[in-house]
Length: 257
Image (cartoon, rainbow, N blue to C red; front, side, top):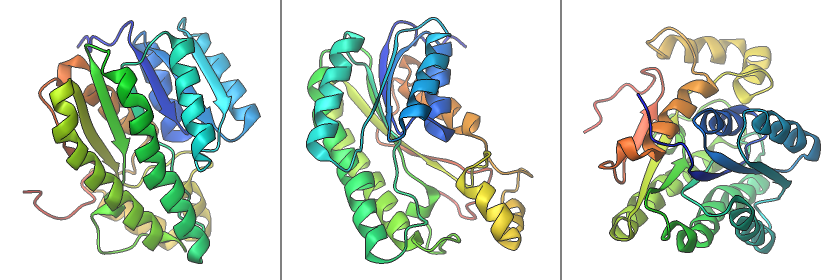
């Protein structure tokens, strides 16, 4: 299926590795010009080089989303360098490995305020697009009462719940301006160096438990999430508004009414 993404412009936060990088790579494969940010210069540089090799305009900078003014200024700069904006993907997240109040502070500033600042900074630009879309990367942790194995899971889950609620509420207003907002909630996603790679090494029983609950027989991959994001961001998904798509291999054991 032609997703009709070619020629569009996208910004993806936290996109130097893992899910964010795979989203950026898939967009580039579809002919989308991409702007990415992350906190590690070497990772950003390597990611941008790979994206440019796909034949698209790709830019990337070191940005700490928790620093609000810096983040908003970067978005405006990225839009100018891309020559416009059609898609904003709020992917950056605070690691659930941060315990105590530190974890809550990071989750609030990165996941929640990162979403709010990102939306408020991109909406004026997205209003100029004929194919405008926002996709928020949340988590099934945002709708689960059973915590996943990590010290900061309560902050992580609460922050993701806030992102889901925020996205659903703004979707009704922004749709009037031609901007579609949807959320993707990944289940356990495995990639080398990622959270579930560490859980596999340090808490093998928790890993096996997650594997058992993914009824499809495996943990997810960044590609699984990128595919969902690409569809929701594309004109092919033009009638989809305010939805929270669980991409979890059947991990969630409930009927989603």
